[in-house]
Length: 592
Image (tube, rainbow, N blue to C red; front, top):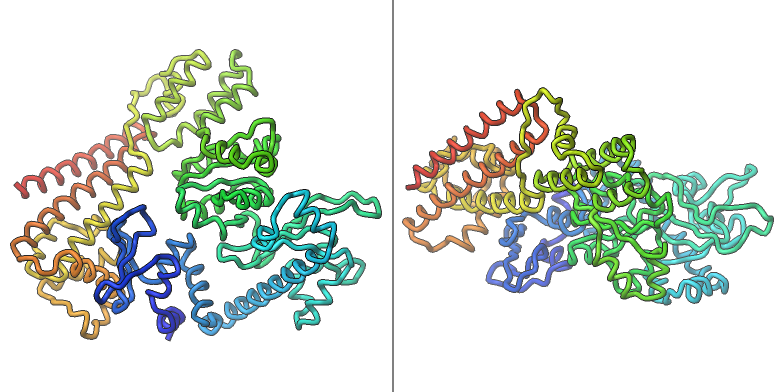
C-alpha cells in the first residue's frame, strides 16, 4: 500500500470536505453549496461510495487530494502532507532512504520551531516592555497577539538553546532551524531581546521568525530594526507569504488579495476585520509568490511603502505579473503612511484605499511622467521604451491599442510610430493589425464551460454504448484532461465495452477509474431515467457544443500568437485558423 491509499483508507472524503463545506445527506450522496461560486442552490456533490466530489457549477471534481489542493491553494505534495497529518500517516515510511531521512529531518525542525514559538510566547507574557509595545504602542489586542502567536526572545545569550537541548534536540538541528548561531566558539540564540513574529506556511506551521528590535543595544552597537530567520530547509523568503494561512479563506471569498510590505501591517489589518491581506516579509514580490497567490485569485493589489525601495519593488512586479495573466493593481496611501499607521487612525479609511485600486500600468505611467522629461527626445524614447515593454505583454489587443493612443498623445508622437515600435516593425514591413483577444477571465470561463461539456458528453457515452457514434468527430486533443483523453481513446478501441463500476476494474483502466466514477455521478444526477431518444438529442447537442468551444479556444490562442508574429508566421497561423473554421462549419452542417 502506498501513502495515498493509506490516507484514503483512514480518512473519508465527506469528513475531509466537511471541514470546508457544510454537507447534507442526499440519498447515497452528500450535497452542499459550491465553495467556488456564490450560489443559493446546492450544486456540490460528494459520493462516499466512490470517494469523489463534483461541483456542477464549475465543472471541477476529483478526490480528497484535489479538493484540498483547490481549497488550500497548494500543490499535490502540500495536500498529501496535510492529509497525512490528519490521518496520522508517517510519509517517511513511503520514501526512499535518502528522501525519508530528509523528511524526518524537516519534521524535527518543525518540532523545534514549534517549541521555540511557545518558549517566546511564555517570555512575552512575562516581559512588561514587550507587552506595552504590542498592547499599547501597537494597539494590538491580546486575542490578536495570541492569533499571530507573537512572542519575545529574552536578552540572555543562550536561554532558548539550552531549553531546546534539554528537550532532546541537537545543536546541529537548532542551527538548521535557524534558531542558534555560533559566536566566539559558543552556541548562542539567533534572536535576543526582540519581539518575535512567527512566520508560518500555508497550513499554519512555523517555519521561521521575523524579529523586531525592542530596545537599543546597551553596548551602543547599531543593530538592524528587523532581522529574519536565514534560509533553511523550511524557510525561503522568496517563496514565503506572511499571513497566508489566515488570509486564504478571505481571499477566496472577496476574490482578491492585498499584499503589504510589513508583517505588522497584516496583523493590524486582520485586527480591523480586513483579512485578505498578506505580506512578503520585506522583499519584492517574486514569481513564486505570485504563483502561490494565483492559486487563490488573479486579482492582486500591492500596498508597498511609498519610499524609493517600495516603489522599485512595485515596479519590478509589474512585468512579472503581466506574463502570468495576473490583474495587478496598486494601492496608494496618502501622506506616505503605511497600512498600520492608517488603520490606527481610521480602519475604514484602509478599506477605502483597498476599494480604490489603480491599475498597475496607469500607476507606472504616472510614475515615469513625474520622473522623466517627456518633452525631450531622450525622455520620449525612455518613456516609450519602459511603457511599451509592459503594453506588449497585455493579453488584450484593444487594451494595447488604448495605451498606444494614450502614450502617443502624452509624448506627442503618432500612434502608428508607437505601434511599429510595439510590434518591432521597420517602415518597410507590412503592418499586421493587432487582433482582439479575450481577457484571461473570459478565456478561463470558456475553458470551464468546455470542461463541463466534455464531461457531460463522456458521461453519456460511457454509460450508454449506443450513444458512442456522437464521439466520431471528437479527437483526444479537443479534450482538456488526460483522463478524458484516455477515456476517449479506450472507447474508440472498445466501442462495445460496457462498464460496471461494481466489478473489478481491468488493469488498463485503473488510471481513469476515479474519473469514470465522476462521470457516473454526473450521469446519475443528470441523465438517469431519460428516454434513449432524449439522450441522443442531448449527446448530439453536447458534441456540437464541444467542437464549437474547442474552435473558440484554439482561435483565441492563434490570435494571441499573431499579435507579435511576422508576416511569414502569420500566414501559417491563418491557415490553421481556416482549418478550424472548416471544422466548425462541417459540424454545424452535420447538426442541421
